[in-house]
Structure formats: structure tokens, C-alpha cells
Length: 294
Ligand code: 0GY
Image (cartoon, rainbow, N blue to C red; front, side, top):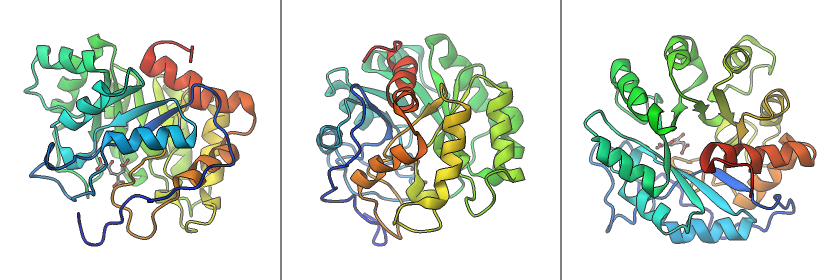
């Protein structure tokens, strides 16, 4: 593990907020264990091992029923740790993989059978090397017939340059962490307005209202500055938002969030049972399990 990288919280608190039955943690990761699933040679950071056993324990402890496990860059395009977690989940986890253009159709079908329902394109410069857009477009065209979607991770200042690419994708597109807005700027200022416009004009684009711990400038005590941004999305696009813990929180250096406190944050951004049910149950079930039943 990188020396300045914090391990996940060893002892999260039991959240006072109880998620509705069937709730899905729709953004989390598994890492390693390195002895079984080595990290990618081209990775930009080395995380602590965070195996599926720990993830599923946390799921139960926090009051969730399901997980969407997202391939993180430290495993590159080697999805074995992800697939292993899916196969041990008893159909209670779905996956988002990273693939390159050399993947075969039969490998895609194997990922699908394991529970993968999307691919992730990462544009955050500190995490990945550049991949040409035409390669990503080719991958998107390959996965579209499977009914999969594309998850994109980028920082707000890069949205203008990425706009045409995102809006040309043939699938549902899910944006990680609200497109990483600068939450010290106004929620109705030009930067976040552009992101809201992206979703307003393109009904196939969704957003995760996750990661207050990464976005907040006000520190670990409540993440107040993130609330208006997440609330605006939840209230404007109630049928196209997802929420996740982001456990085990790779690359956190200033503080490590208490996952119980992150769950309590949900009640501040989705006020009322109906918005909470859509965010935590209906939307992820529709996208990942093909139903709204829990
Ligand atoms: C996240 C956020 C981060 C890392 C990755 O794939 C990754 O390595 O997504 C980050 O460092 O902001 O969603 O896990």
C-alpha cells in the first residue's frame, strides 16, 4: 500500500439512517487480495487489499442488500478480482468492468454471465493514461448490444471537452460522483449548470450522487458544502440518480470516512421516502437487475 494512503475505516458506526428494503450500494470496489489478484503494473497507486468478504460484511452491517462493484484503475483491465466477487455474491452484486479493444466476444459474454453490466471509461488524469476516443467509441459499440452501459469518471473542468464524446455514446451513460464539481463554486454557477444541462438535454445520462468525502472542502464533519449539489440532482432527476459508498475509498489522504456517516448523508440529499426508494432501490434495480422489484 502507498505510504500516504489511508486504509478503509476499521470500525464504521451503525448508521442512524436505515436504508429501505432492497437498497443497493451502487458504487464500491474490491481490491485484491494481491496474493491472488495482483495489481496492474501500470497502476498509479497501490491500495490496501479490500476483498469481497469485507465488502459483503459491510453491506450487511450498513443495511444494504446489494452492491454494484466498479473496476478501479489499480486493477487495470484485469477484471478477475471483480468477477470473483460477483461469483461469490449469490446474485447480490453486479459489476462494471474495464476492458480494452482486444477483448473477444466470448470474453464479453463470460463477463455478462458473471454479472457485469457496464464498462468504465476513466478520464481522471492522475489515475490513467490517455486512451484515444475512437478506441472507447469502438468498445461502447461492442457492449451496447449486450444491454450494458458506460460509466464515466472525469473532473468538472474537463466536461466541455468531453461533451461531444459523452453525448455521442449509444448506451445509457452513468457519471461518477456528479462529474466532480468544485463545490466551493455556486450550485447554480456556470460549472454545475453545465452538468445539469448535460442531464437535462440527454435522457440517457445518469449521475451518481456519491463521494461527498472526495468533493467536500469543509472536511469530514457533515460534508455540508456537497449537500446542495447532490440534492439538486436527486430532486431534478429522481429516476436517474444512484448512490454508493465508494468503499474502500482509494486515494483518500486527508481523512478516511466512516461509512456509517456516509449512509446518514443519504437522508440529507434525498429527503423523503419516495426519493430515497428511487435512489437506493428502483433506479439501481432497473439498471443492473433489469427490474424494480427488490
Ligand atoms: C473512485 C475514485 C477514485 C479512484 C478510482 O478507478 C479508480 O482508481 O475510481 C479516485 O481516486 O478519485 O471512485 O474510486
